[in-house]
Length: 276
Ligand SMILES: C[S@@+](CC[C@H](N)C(=O)[O-])C[C@H]1O[C@@H](n2cnc3c(N)ncnc32)[C@H](O)[C@@H]1O
Image 1: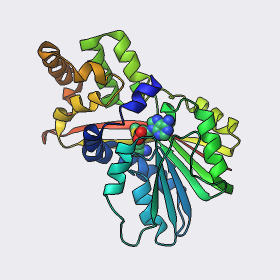
Image 2 (image 1 turned 90 degrees about the horizontal axis):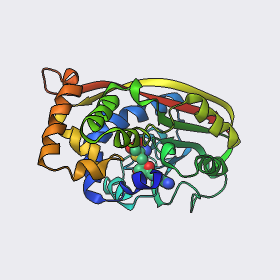
Image 3 (image 1 turned 30 degrees about the vertical axis):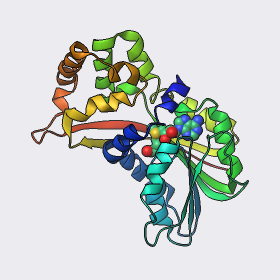
């Protein structure tokens, strides 16, 4: 299941949707929370694992300035192509984009970074502790770690509502498969334990709520499901299933649509911070 979800990030078309719709609504706000807490200093070197289209790496590069350095890693060439396509930002740290799994982190030298981040990626890795050990290897002694992972799906009304849409139309097993993907590491205690097991100290987990806004409204919810672990079902829905999806979206998410047509929902993420 984890591998299947990872392969959803390989195709180029859906990645543009991720970058244009999901990143601004969901992932940029999470990056702001993580970066606020990290209080980066100009000149530091930051490693972002499972960087996607650079949701965290790009604003980090601005904060680090031209004397800093950023490495953005991802297993998906399509995601990295989007990140690279944005080009260098003036007065920012230079960014090296690396195509590599999180474990092992190929091409990342020992003790080569001051800060390591991973935003909404750890839950998908086949070897989570192994990936955290790789981030630790890449950090200097005293280097800082920040790992963001979604909290339980029913903490976030939009995600939960989409899960109910999946249940309404496709049944129990697809709904559970949907929920165990991005929301597959919901327990802050389990997150802290994994970070400690990888050898980090001073581990703490914070719970943050972001306010997601989708100005496009309900129209972008089906494409979002197509990028989820139930993308095979929703992407190939027949006419009757499409009608039932539309009805279920109205029923489950209608209360989140404002007068302006935008969908708004609080979304809850855990963020683990630790020190090497
Ligand atoms: C939900 S996206 C998050 C991307 C980015 N951090 C952000 O905040 O927008 C998950 C990312 O994890 C990457 N990924 C999944 N499995 C991976 C693995 N085993 N190693 C490295 N990256 C992986 C995917 O390619 C995808 O870019």
